[in-house]
Amino acid sequence: MDEVRRARAALTRLVEPGDSTGAALVEALGPVEALSVASGRLPIDPSIEARVGSLVLGSGATRWEGLAGALGRWKARVPDLAPHRDLETIARFGGRFIIPEDREWPDGFEDLGAQAPIGLWVRGEERLPSHTASAAIVGSRDATNYGLSVAGEMARGLVDRGVTVVSGGAYGIDAQAHRAALSSEGPTLPTIAVMAGGLDRYYPSGNEDLLRAVAHRGLLVSELPPGASPTKHRFLRRNRLIAALGGATVVVEAHWRSGARSTAHHAADLGRIVGAVPGSVYSGSSAGCHRLLMDGVAVCVTDVRDVYELLAPMGEGLESQREGHTAPHDGLAVEDLLLLDALPLKTGTTIDSLARVAGLSGAQVRAGLGRLQLLGLSQAVPGGWRRSDKRS
Image (tube, rainbow, N blue to C red; front, side):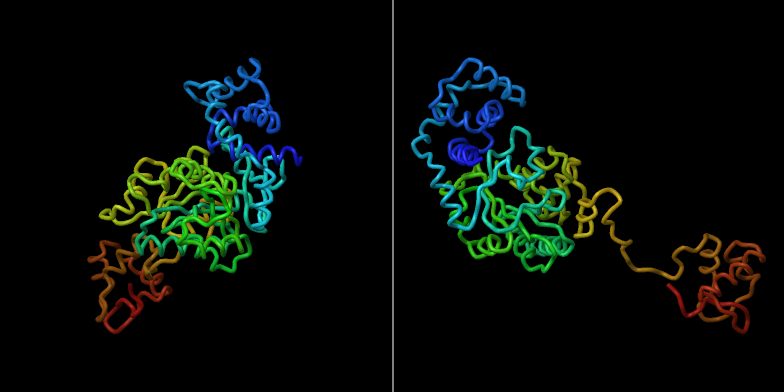
């Protein structure tokens, strides 16, 4: 097991996230032999070339560069391989390196198939929860006050209900989701931040205090080893991990083209539920959310109850019917509504007059008045009947 862990740790430094050839090589040979081939210590056998090529092309790729091409890309990184050092570094920061062979490996990564990470670097003492007990909240870095308010209420409400909040540690909506999750005293791991670089430093630096708090009470995770720098490609690739770690993904605010929309599409591809928060039609910050709703990728969510109901198993976790403004006439039959509308507010009127105004028979009026009286909606007064003081 130690040999397998060291091999996978080395491969995370050698192979970029989402490298289909690297993933196929590990699948075909196992991590130890795959590292020997990838680092050039083991010659390329034609049978290995055929097996890896078949896996790459079978995963949906239209063409393949061949193992020789991949080795050419990886060659410059081989001298930097030092898995012992990387494992010691993450341990020094109070973290660990988990692999698919571990029981702690996230169950949601199974849905990633060939796009699953080779291993996962983690900072924090808690264990990774099941994706069914987690929800991702993502959105714009330049969030509006509206977006920050909604994200905060949703994140805190989810943790209060025992759901872990997953996000990307960035400015804006991500940071607000983490911050609100940490403010809850809920019964579960509050939050997970998925990073696009090594966990030996906090990025972005402006969120250092927040990310320290996440590492202390929640978890920081990355598929990249200590010392790896965050790049645009790595930010885009890490979005699939955010989607896989959550049973549902909610986009609070997003521009027409944004990383948050990328996360939403990853989630949809994995068969996860996607929610989008509507905003003003005049706000560019909500254009991406409206696009997700328009394209049918997401369903509309407006508060934590909507999100929780989407995340819970069918028939479970449903909240009681929401209470809005109720009126005394709610639930009345059509005849009684007609009669209630015909009743005057101040002076009494006769049954014959009520029948004429309401378009009902005398018998219907008398029966209806009895029902309305029991409900406190009508009363007998000198001169006939009128509506009671309890009115809509």
